Image 1 (cartoon, rainbow, N blue to C red):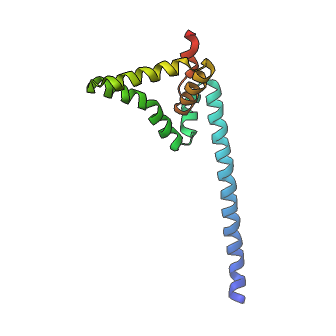
Image 2: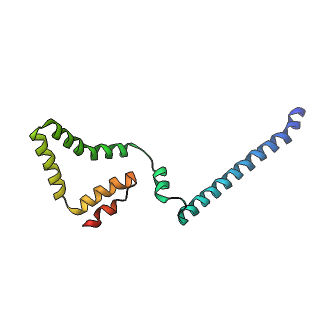
Image 3: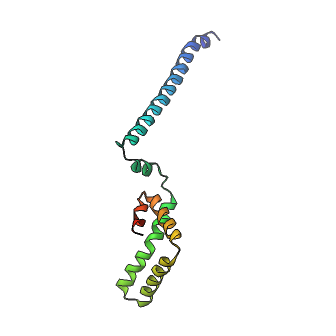
Length: 127
C-alpha cells in the first residue's frame, strides 16, 4: 500500500490540472461565443451566414429542394418532349398554385426561404 500512497499526490495533481484545463476551455469557449455575438451585433460578421452554418442540414432540405424542383423538371420535360399533355398539366399546376390563398403561398415560400436562408419577404413586396 506504501507505493500506491506515494502516487496519490501525483494523481491528485494530474486530476486537478485536467479539471483546471477543462474549466479554462469552457471559459475560452464562452469568451469566443461572446466575441462572435458581439461581431454579429456590430455587423462585422453576417448574421445570416451564421444562421446558415448552424442550421441542421437534414432531410427537410432535400425534400423541399425536390418539391420545388419538380415543377421545373416537368416544365423542362414538357418543352423538350413536345408532349402537350405534360404542358397542359404544368400549366394547370401553376394555375392552381396561383389560385391558392395568398397566405398559403406566403407560408410555403417563407418555409422554403427559411430553409435555404433566403430573404423571402422581398418576394412579396410587389403585392
